[in-house]
Image (cartoon, rainbow over all chains, first blue to last red; front, side):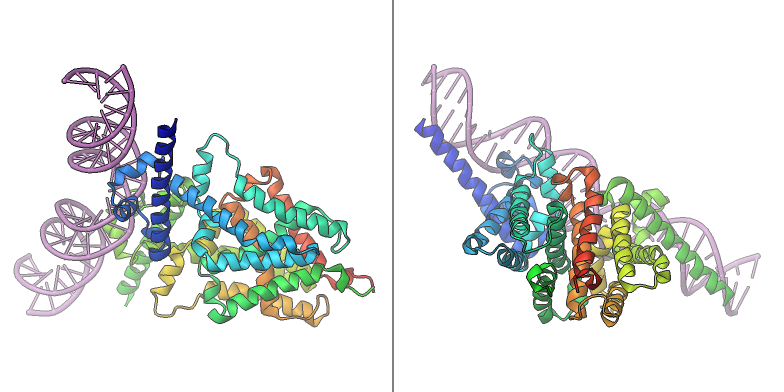
Length: 210
Length: 210
DNA sequence: AAATATACTTTACACTGTTAAGTTATCCAA
DNA sequence: TTGGATAACTTAACAGTGTAAAGTATATTT
């Protein structure tokens, strides 16, 4: 079985080659300029060879989206050490903003573009595991905050959506050039941090007069 | 001058014809299926005729984006009658969610797609007037809330971004098929309303024990 | 050594946005 | 009324896209 294994490994290597080339094009030339032909050019194969490793372009973008989630998770490793769940929530929000602003291409694939979701729909199991795992971390943190009476008890789903919605809203508006038109460039990130701070402050029960 | 005027009017009529056809295609067949050729087919002109009325495809999408803002504004007319600014803020949020969920194609053009902003960048004045006007209504309402001590005084810009971010986040996640994967379809809208309710509640000072 | 399977390429199709050149119809002055 | 200019529109074409079918080597197995 050693030989079949080696072949499998080679296959994965070429897959990685394709993904790396795609991401490079994405970052260097923007989404609309990523084409199968350019990817093929970059890895020095013919365009159709790409189709021996990925069903279609959407599947490539789905793989990249998954890699994005891995990177976000790595980015969040440090959170585990924070004991106070509300503080952890705050830091999680800051991390999310950082990640999105520092990796707009990954973020786009993870949360904005349709292509990865189309690929997902074409798969046997249509579950969005990456997204589900990410949101569950947020929900768990919120539940812990409520348990410890750090924030008011409420529907965790609704609160999670509110908070995720807010940070996603900020990042996606920025990535798609909406904030740039309304806020000076150097104030965008600080204002985001301020917005997050504001909302954390608003829900922090310890902040209220007793 | 009557003749030149009539010509101008005709020109506007064909422009409207193009925009209507584009929007119809957009709604019926989805964004990726709107092509100049299909638009031309629908209005029974040759593809290149479209270019006599619009510089390029981006400019068509920009015009549609502007129409979307008009529709949002109309949708918000009713708000003027609400005296209490916090109540008005709440209703404004609900209106926003409604508008986005009921008109996903317009919403996409207004706040998600790159094309309209690219067209904007290509224009002499690069100001995003539509977006600016919309956000200013939100800011004014927040300022009024703070004046009347209905919510805590703070940086209006940051608070406005937080609230806009939240509702935009929810709508855009839904439009781009992220919520559909995590929340049962029939619970999406109610949960959004709940999220909005939650945040309004969290900032409402009258809700706090004195 | 012959047969088969693997890896890859060539060619082709049906699209896309957009430009340049060509055509027809309209209008206006002589 | 006729001739020339102008406006409105179309045809043809370019360079690109995703992708499928068929062809061609190379490597592996019998």
